[in-house]
Length: 243
Image (cartoon, rainbow, N blue to C red; front, top):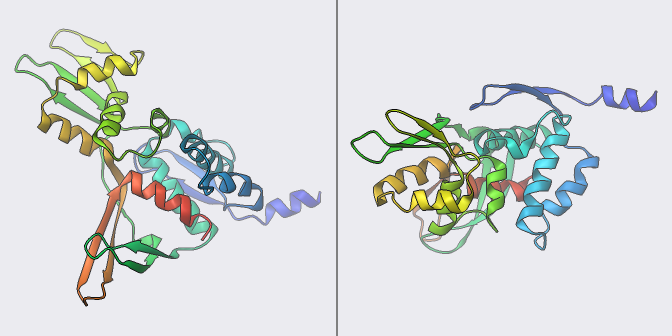
């Protein structure tokens, strides 16, 4: 009886994801989610533990109607942003290191200023004039688990790109490669030229949300820093979910 009365006082919000177009309801982060936050924000936690607990936190706030590990990173970003806004507020203050002057700069950011990018579910690379195509899907949260940390090197992105191959198509036949091993898919990537790899890397690495941080350094120069990749976005949210 009492617990039911308490639950009725918890606000509920509706959210439509930008990529899947599916709609779900969610509630703010509560005390019972602190167990997930503790692991996610602990610097000694492994990358896998941080990622899985971040997903568990989102699942919990969506009444476990989501399977966050199977969500595209693009939709997961959107869920995190809305969850933080409804749980703590739109505004956050933090410090960044200016890439030009290397000094620490205080930043005030309104999370509503994030721009939602229009991105595609799939991309393809045509390997030759005979019509051989390699098709790639948007990465899911679970795809990051093949790495030891958020992607930062070409080797990291090569593995992530390979994991996102789902189909190879010829003019007469289509082959599903969903059951192929990562090692097998990596061999396909080896035969892409540098421009083709760059195109797919941008498709895989770009996030669904972008913002521009504006600030002034000690030399009185006005500067801007665009945040548009999912790796830095997720790192950022692992910190500000508790700020």
